Image (cartoon, rainbow, N blue to C red; front, side, top):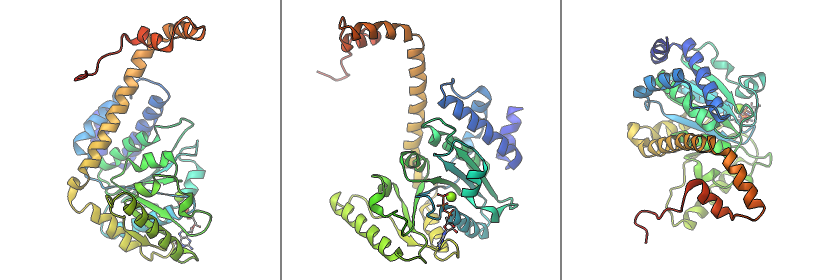
Length: 329
Ligand SMILES: Nc1nc2c(ncn2[C@@H]2O[C@H](COP(=O)(O)OP(=O)(O)OP(=O)(O)O)[C@@H](O)[C@H]2O)c(=O)[nH]1
Ligand SMILES: [Mg+2]
């Protein structure tokens, strides 16, 4: 049965894909909540699709609430559909405890593509568990990739730490800003501008768009001189998502990043895979280590608190004497 599931996903059966996405999302949430690694069925599904991964260009779209991300993604989809590309969208909302609910539905606004079999939209939310949303998004993006969608868009609301992590799950990160609303670039968290491969000033029809664009250019120039010009400033484009102005150019800019084939993203994908495997190993070791030592920790903590033991001695009691690092003195 599980084999059929993988086969149907690979064949692009969207009903089965929806079911597989739910399986993977649930497994990911369970892992986050402390369960053992994803169940055998999910592990088998992931192993079965693994050889088919890496064909999709994963495009992260991030930016402050209301900047026009969903409208812009919808407009981009129209451009990609004209080129007969099948587009997958994952709408990620780190602040929402709901999944697939009306709230997120409202935020996604891609109804114009409802009924188009070449567009698959799915939402996921934090579900009360901190962190790990990026991992779930990555697992789900894998399925869309395996099912033949390309590009796979990851839209995240907001520009905080969680969104940056989700951006890290993409090959290309598009930062969408809009004039006004107090969302000037001074208010952006550190690292947000640096994470952008493409910057969009959307709502270019509104007052202040020119000023925002100028401020962005200045910020990137400053950064370049400050960092000795190590990283080139990302392309900065103006769009009006509601009318489609600038959207073809944006699609072309995004597509150009994938022009070199999968090799273009190889370094990033290797880094991502390393992060992913490292996180899974850490989860496993953490669980294995503490699983049998909670009582001992409680005993040692009592000793430390009452001054009979130093914290360092307690550590040595748990993991043994400090090891001399390899090649150390
Ligand atoms: N004037 C103007 N309005 C726009 C433009 N793009 C989007 N809007 C409007 O801005 C509002 C927010 O658009 P969304 O696409 O929902 O923005 P979002 O960034 O996805 O919002 P969240 O998902 O809530 O973070 C909607 O009313 C859009 O119609 C634009 O280029 N110009
Ligand atoms: Mg939105």
